[in-house]
Length: 428
Image (cartoon, rainbow, N blue to C red):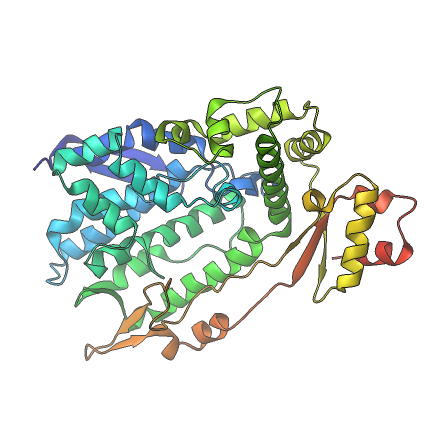
């Protein structure tokens, strides 16, 4: 079994964690693999850079951050000699933390939705496939890639290992909240990470929190709540994501109609044909996608050309918020847009983002996340929402109404009916 320490510790300077320390040869080799280096070319926040100009950070830096938080947690467990922590699982946790986002594609969730893809599935395919990452992991043990994949897809039998990477209180969420807050320039995502690291414990196969640390966890959950509504679901970012989805939708339709693109790349053809290989997926990054969009601004198909021009030059769709929309009015808008050669299927969208910052444990839910438990002085476990008024209040809170997205030019039309103009011209 190859689990060698580096002869000299490697250090990354990081704006969020100050320093990221690498002591294992396996981790160092994984970081330098071609598959992991690809994450430098994938933005962490997708199209959010069009809303927050500083949001240019990558999946690479986030993955290093998740690794570092996991390393700190494990180090704390080992220093304190907690009997409930399986020391032999340390390297497995670190590898899973580092590689958890390995399969993210360009613009992340937008491309997943357009092509019914799942980045977690691609992470597993890369880890188990004929890749540098797989060969590095197999140097540890022949079945080590399967074990790492099991942690990432949450099938690994030890909950305590999985929960460090995927739970309501995992290293992934902790890093992206702090990192995204830093690079977007907002303060909503900040919380006391050092305090949290001091109060978490391994206990009977779970990761739990000392009861005295409840307020630090409340702060973390409130930060998450604020980040979702102020950053992740920002209506301008949603507009950019919708526009990107429309580009991909149009490109797919044209491909299926045997349209002859003046410019295309083999990896993109594989994507449009739903025939992505590992090598083609590896080539898909945001630089390639944006190069194509730049070229597609000159396509003969006016819809694709216009959508790409809007995206590349940040001419995003406007929006109007509403609680309920008259279906008759909506059909009138669709029909009118068709008369302007602006088909509603590409130029109109209704969006209703919703997310709960904390889901109370509900037995039997298919996609439930492992809940947060508080450990009291008598070693009793209590699910946090049972003790925290703050968690209970934000858990049941739904925010945000429907938004109708449309091109601003629609309001400039001289023949736009007055009642449609009045609806679309509402101030948000």
